[in-house]
Length: 113
Length: 115
Image 1 (tube, rainbow over the protein chains, first blue to last red):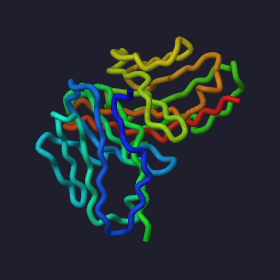
Image 2: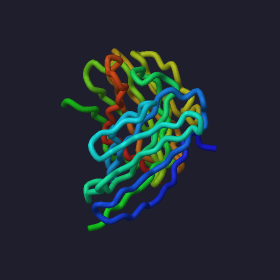
Image 3: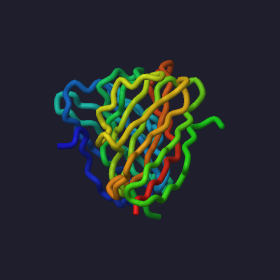
Image 4: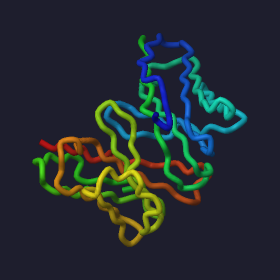
């Protein structure tokens, strides 16, 4: 079983739609969580950290459910430029530590005009 | 440059040959990571350096893989006697311990093809 599991998609949505991705992690000792974005044939880049109380960054909202060991990402008012693969990430280290990150295989999002 | 630099960007080699992949992290970043990504797959952790030491090398797939870091900066990942299953994009990342969120900054990767 993978440590971080995601639905690979693809999610194919029209512009303006709201889309949600879920991810589950298997190690209950995981302390910090992130969403990274990876464009086709490019390197991953941090989209946002995930805080226990949930957090929002513009059109993006991330939530964490420690009891169920899942993380979610909600994208509102989808733009064409949101088309990418979204990687769910966990770490056994604290958010400001340099411990290794464990990546899921990613969920692919396609936003159509 | 300001970002993580990796070389070569592309490497095609024959099965059985040795290859060296280089990573130059962001200046001042003490943590350095190697991951690999096979086609359509997620990132697989290989090894992590804090300074010149490697507290976690648990992801190295076999003893054909080794990595070193010198001067707390440049790192080299060496794959001996390459096999076709080694074909992947090898990604290097660095982070600063002074970062509030431990963000990893990735290089563009070294695409390895073993024929």
